[in-house]
Length: 383
Image (cartoon, rainbow, N blue to C red; front, top):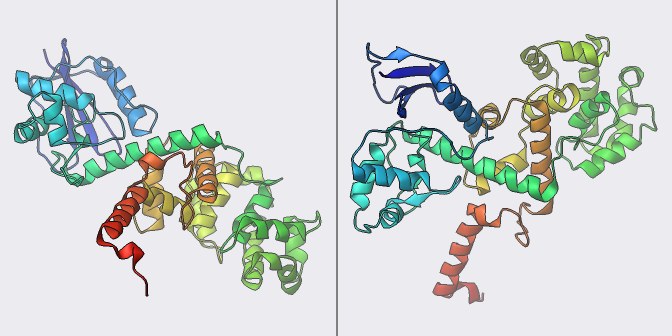
């Protein structure tokens, strides 16, 4: 008797198929590959409960290996290859030649590729971790876009595992004494560093409140926040932000009771509030699960080899798809990004004692370039 079940995932609807011997197939309905559900199959949610749980944990970055009873159909050689695929470590990639050597036949790269393509349990048996000899992505049954996203998910999960080990879990990272101070800080930090924000906040001399900003003349407010830079524009922005906050009678609990998408739409309509500022306010001040994307995020993800979308919202949604939908998790992870960018991943990186040295593709590429210069003699050329 064959059973099946399906559930939604970040990659499309996933169908699980199996029998009493275990899970035999995983199918992804993402429009890249047609498949049919047999009329003889019996739908059973209960039989696949544990598989669904583990897959969801994997998609949210909480699981790195699967512990499921598997029963894929294939030849002895295919099963040997699939076992070798299952042994490729999370977040790493091997070439077809590497797998061929692993199964004891170094000349069987092409046969390994064919067995890889026939893998009936993608994701669980991680054929997405096999790449070309040059490190480039090669064919994948459900499209190269899905393969890239799976690899990016694993890279980012490993990244944050290392950062947590080095810096700790930074849930309370944003330095502020109130929700309103977070809101003000989110505006003041635009195009400047936090030390300048702290100087501007100190100039309020304990009087910082929405009522104070509302009644203070714009010119006077501008002088108070001068250390933050662009003080004239930011004074206008703070006035506009307080005007929005007044609609909730300056009551943070009333704001929290509103749904996140409504709040985000409202904030983005406020003069001078863009995506990063809106998400900082929503996440840090009101505990709404919106991941904050900044220049540090782009820099670190890019150096890890993650394909970074150009549009702000696309990168935010990509990041959010990789983690549990939790404001506390997003706070901690954003804090880790900022701490690591300040300590090591600067514009000119400081790679000494960096906790992600071995994961950094930027460092690898730079070393290759330096070796090429040394070999060509260009490193020692003089003007």
